[in-house]
Image (cartoon, rainbow, N blue to C red):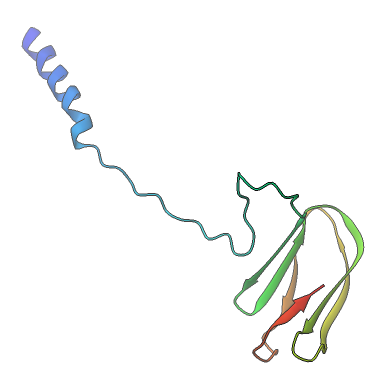
Length: 106
């Protein structure tokens, strides 16, 4: 019995030598993230591009918020919606028909 206990003790004491560490995987936040050392006020909004869609989420309840997407090149308004944001529900804009360029969301 003593030999069995000594054997188990040696097996368990060498187990950490064979442990493997799993490398950390970086997470892409697609448009917003929080930095612990940031000192600025955070906005209760998140906007990101997902394939051919722009997804906008307000994290405070807003009624009748107007969201406009316009071309920066010629200030042409591409789309405008008046939306009520309740319970952080996202609003999705399909931009597959837009030409390449820079757009401003207001």
